[in-house]
Image 1: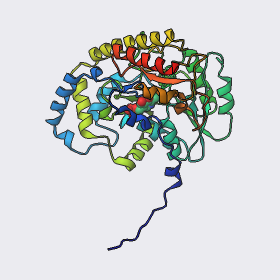
Image 2: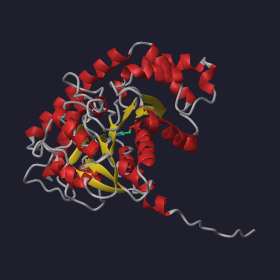
Image 3: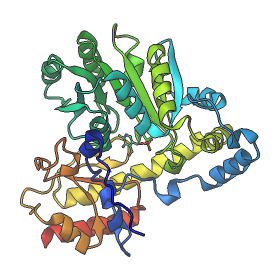
Image 4: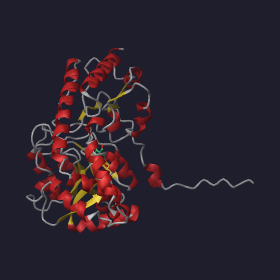
Length: 393
Ligand SMILES: Cc1ncc(COP(=O)(O)O)c(C=O)c1O
């Protein structure tokens, strides 16, 4: 029997969502022998498998794991997450989400009306561009650099009509590996408060600091800056397991309910089983020891990769935490075709232009984002040698 072929007209919003250039790299990683410097995933040996196994077993014994639950998250997990959340102004509430990604999504959609502009750091983690496109938001790029301590450039952008929110990633950024100083953080909050622009602070790498505590989070500092509004996003992905798909937000009271309603509209609530696994894991009291092992592991890997790149005349600022280096190629290097030559050498990296605000903008063409977290130190050495060989081809 012949059926009518019907192609539904798609929403202009979904058509505007850009491909995620990082997810587009996944198929290359399945090639046998490929060394992956592209993906920001914890390495296999950085999971606390024993602890997660025990926590999963305990979680399955609990009927709560198999039931519907509150849209804002499991109250017992929320209570356990308080200890992991930066200090925040009175009245902030915690809500559990499907990763930091969903915090940013819910926050921007709650704060920014369609057609308004969201300010994004440049270079940017590209999944944020997809959030903005799906919500019908315009984007504009800003830079926070030591050369502009008064953030005059940002002040100018904030003064433009129609800016509704600013997304910030001030600690161990992805891709740049940068961390803003305390004065810059305060200045940013003062400016945003002056222009009545809310800030979404994406902070999934805070716990991966290699040299002492990172600077105070924007959400903490917002208590000292009258009129500033910060929604903070945390994640269990980089410290426990991304497959749990759990993050959480610290949100001013007035925005917590709208964000929860929006979440409920999409998928009702966070996954109950994953939340119970996380709760039981936190109850095991293993997180501190686990994190101190992971920090040492990643710091040694950063050192190994940074040293190999410096020997090959790359220019880089070694990140003080997180997972990424964002080096510039040596002066005389041939950037064109490097990605393909690297694939031929069985090494995968994320090209700089993947982090531009606009597709086709090649100003970051001499940059590579390299994740040092996913491979052991020796394999990182091999990956760096392959990259250098690709450069010399
Ligand atoms: C800056 C940034 N934000 C958000 C995310 C997404 O994190 P989650 O797995 O918690 O959704 C990532 C993951 O790489 C990231 O680098």
